[in-house]
Length: 298
Image 1 (cartoon, one colour):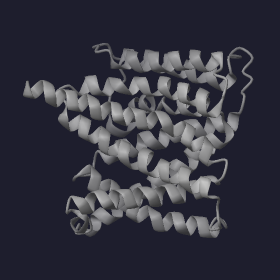
Image 2 (tube, helix red, strand yellow):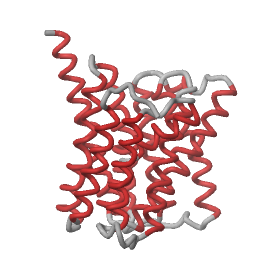
Image 3 (cartoon, helix red, strand yellow):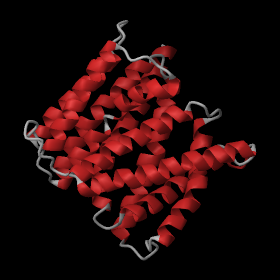
Image 4 (cartoon, rainbow, N blue to C red):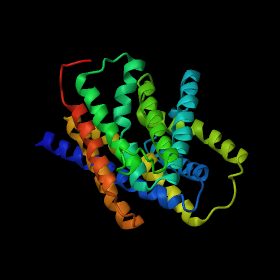
């Protein structure tokens, strides 16, 4: 009974993380009506930093986070420059240029990108199923990018698609390189944000973004910072630690883009395109193929 109860808690935390992720595409789009990409990054990162600091303070671990070797600060500067600074600037730009439904689904191809980048970076071998998964997944990307006009190759917004795909590369690189970091993930994330915030402030100052902004933009940025950059991470980390089946929890991710489309349709009043649905099916299909265990290699 205890094991079942623990697994039930794992599902609850996993679903809570999925719910957070399902709302952020809408939050991004609404916030960008009032803020520039840099302003959204600044206020969201600050909100996330304060949220994570509060969590660590309550746990009595805030002081110990900074009691790390100099080498750890070097890592934090490097990874903080990738996430949140560069990654979210690029991701928000994709949302600025694309409908929320297209940007968020394109972003879900990052899991396939991670597998492909692991080949040159970690020396992994490409399995036949992974090659097939990549073809299926990126055919879905092509359907979304062309809004169904695959043969004509008429891209709806090639710059927006490029930013969205670049964000998947950065996110995959962030997690691949993070495998070398040791320590508590929450501590590491907070230290990364601590090092990134000064860089974000300097970037905003240089680009003239440190100006008064509407309260609606601040509210949206706080939501993004707490739920996308902070709370979802804690929920997911807790679920992964409680579960006795990592695969079952990981499969919950597939709910997120579907639920996100519903929220986008209702709150943003975006008509969901047929090409978006087809692309989503192909991308999720590719990710499912990737998860099938097989021995064939290319």
